[in-house]
Image 1: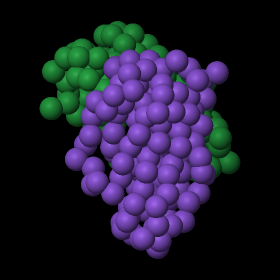
Image 2: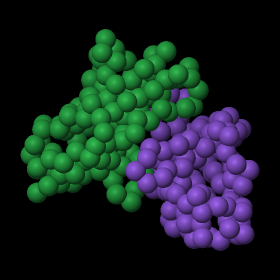
Image 3: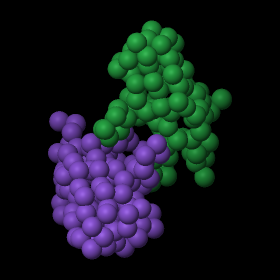
Length: 113
Length: 112
């Protein structure tokens, strides 16, 4: 079945450092790929998404490119802020697979001032 | 309006109580979801309603009973819960399958 694997955390960075969180997936169809973010005490919210190969999703300085050849959707940000401290979930959803969204295990990010 | 609301925000209940969690969205989405999230884990899907009909039940114990009174509302009725059911319960909605899900802030449930 479909699956998502993302790097284990926690990841601790200093403010203004470069961030990469790796995410790879396996899917039989043509899924849409997502990054969701969960701030402390809150629900998940969409950070960015890409619906087909070579699409780049971007939001709030974060970017991720849908790479079919490497089945990856790595999250990057050039300069993190303390306010980016949160848990980041990579996810996939296949329209032909019904309503199930497959989530990765989550990566907790701590950004120090 | 891209908001999903959930009430209550916190709930403490005994193992013999009956309570309900409520979720509401006004985005015209046709699919609504209940998830359970334990600490430091991703959300686990419990139920999906599509066009007000139960579409997915992920083998959830019968002490959890979902209800979709109309296209904007989703309830989760709780009865005879166990301490291990303590978790954050998240509601979400989406336009259709494969689309972005919009999550509510969750209900933090504690079962004593």
